[in-house]
Length: 275
Image (cartoon, rainbow, N blue to C red):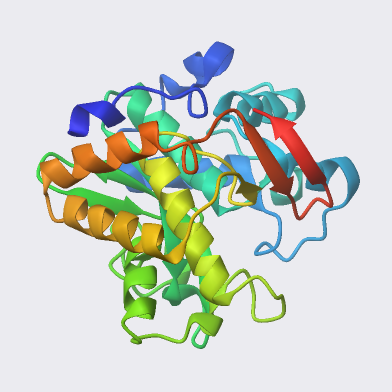
């Protein structure tokens, strides 16, 4: 099924900026370093962004991310940019631009949605990372992270917890759902957050790489159980489960992204958007 992830989606397609990806390195750690040179996290960088700069976090498309970058720096992506002047994003956008660059080279790549227990000792932040096929297995790569600050290989992350894994463990009473979410200082956590994260993981798996604060459809506990089981089986290499998941997403109107989302953004925007 890897071939599905070689082609760009409308979210990852660099569009008129595709030539910028031509000269990016094939080496994944080197590629991730360039991605960090272009993007800056709206919270994790410790820089306060407001107004139109903060609104950059709602850029759903790789082409838009590259457009914003090139307005300020009409130069190759590897040319250094001051951190404060990079495109303001969240973790999903580091993953999206990584995936776009890998697909540009014909490498199967996708975004995984879940949680990063490696970002804090007592909290599991919601997170998104790139995953690519290295010829023999899927490898998780977290381009947001400076590899010098972590005691593991950020280009082959071992500790990432997918939304399906978190939901399954929660339903079996193996984790405290109230320690999974956006932040220990915000109410976006717990059972409902894990539930919604399963739908986000499915959408990204099916190449609808929406923002992490986009909401649509309706998902129940029972349906999340079924979807998580399919995701976990597919991750074990069950191609029948992979096909069943794709069919379920494509045919269930309560799950399928239909072109409209309710966006509840950290930029302050809260409303319905046609995507």
